[in-house]
Image (cartoon, rainbow, N blue to C red):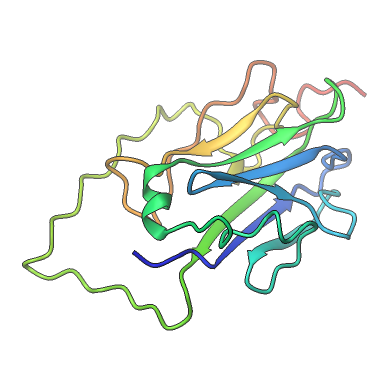
Length: 183
């Protein structure tokens, strides 16, 4: 299997007042966790930024956040979940994440072999979670200091498919970033 030479994590913070954070954000991909941080003022309301790890890195501490050392292979991405972990500065630190997109890149020139009649069959898609689960991609809830947004990339799920969102943690706003928050 080819190596993963670059990972792109695009994060969009909601534009609502108070949606930003000064907390720490980590992305878990292929069994490793990467610190999502740059020299700019990250995670402010309305912020839309693509953090690049590996080739053409634009993150702080690029050497420690490089998916090439230790080496990650594309098969690793199928064995481990893809997730975001948010660590707030204190218990009242919330972050209203509007959208997230995680891409893993094999080396330049790598082409996937097309599936043919002799290829192994694709596994059935994973069962979706109940529909009442809040979606981080629709901006329906804040991520609290103890929350994690995760999607399973393991058995029964093909690479590149989106996993169903997990339920919001207890106490998270259900009707939007500002819903239920105290002034």
